Amino acid sequence: MNVTSVRETGGDDHRQGTAAPYGAHPVAPASPPLVKVVTGASIGTVIEYYDFGIYSSMAVQIGVHFFPPQDAKTGVILAVGSTGLAFLVRPLGGMLFGILSDTVGRKFTFMVTLILMSLATILMGVVPPYAAIGMAAPLIILGLRIVQGLAVGGEYAAASTYVVEHAPDARRGFYTGWLGAMTSVSLLLSLVAVSITSRVFGPAAFNDYAWRIPFLFAAVMLVFALFVRSQLKESPIFLHLKAKMGVAKSPLRDVLTNRQALGDCMAVAFGICTPQITAGLTGSMFTLYSLQTLAHVDTGYATLVVAFGSLFGSLATVCFGALSDRLGRRRVQICGMLAGVVLFYPIYAMLVDAARGGRMDLWFWACAMQLPGAMIVGPGFAAMTEAFPARRRATSVALAFSVGGVIGGFSPGAALLLSSLTPSGMGGILWPIAVLALGGAIYWRWIPDRSGQRMWDDVLEGNK
Image (tube, rainbow, N blue to C red; front, side, top):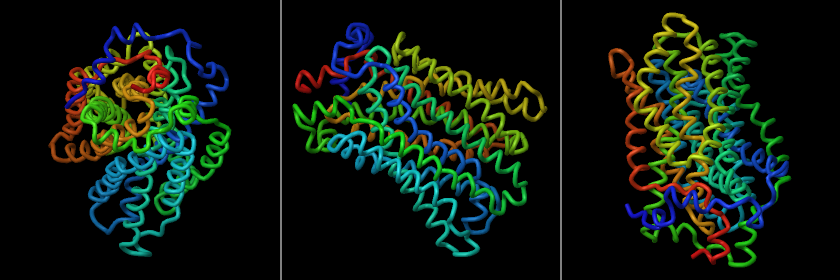
């Protein structure tokens, strides 16, 4: 893996030496308009993880209604596995929409991905069950997961690039931290939507038909999101590239045919993106599965506990993003991975024990499960976006995040499978521990700290 180009311009000294007072380059000031930028970019993350959250929370209902009749556990694994399929196609979506973002524009791209993501979620709520249309039902579900995965493959790159290219150099971690926080907020929103629907309609009606309602609610979110994003303007750096230098004719080819560029991309994929996704899902979806299957906690109560933990996680994510502006992305993220490796198992054991005993400290351990993910996710969007030059930034970020997401997206399913194979059921937590250990080693060896670097430098210097 050749990452010389990143290493030569990185490191802690680089971070400390390049942070410039805001205003050194022609970027709009960090004021209410920047709040609008962050809100508009974050709304896609909200819809994506809202979809992921409700789909994962209702894996039992989806397995029963859309897949061939079998035992309940197999149906759940198939439903969760189809979510992994969405992550599997993300690299293709990343390549497609990354190219679009680097050639046509950041704003146009995340308008397209927003519509595709939302429609895939909404249609989930109207697909007839297996009992009505047979094998067409699971095929349609898988098709919608593929569309959703393709769209998400480009959404993150366009959104994070858009925010980074607007934000002050010295506060990128804070502003992009909100993108990561929206992951927890949207999971919280999905869990609340599922919980309220279940309580309003009752278990029988919910399992029969009312589980579809949270999917249909995405239509309301789409209308709001389209309004917010339509008010945004294109990234100033992209406009400068387009007017003064010309956009890259083939950014994907530039990445794939350049050994250094491809090495940088893969280092970010497996050193940042995979641990980021894995840790985040471990603190939310895997925790929820464990409370339901290992501790046999009521679904509604388990949902509230994980929702509370997700709210804590979202606040912690922003704090760690801001902390990375002072200490550097590298320090904060590697500490987060180390924390996950050392603490995930004991925290998880205490969580399950508290749940089985009906103790109130369950809420504390649910929050603790969120901490490693918050430390990794908070600085994550800034770290991965800073690693690449402007002309191929969105393509590189999309490819890295999508490739890393292939492993990260399968993490809940892999952990659930490991749990089913171990007598105690505790083996599932070993999956995220292994992923974070490997990711931390890759980060330590190949990814330097580029916190605070001036985003306009490579543009004004001709992108050399």
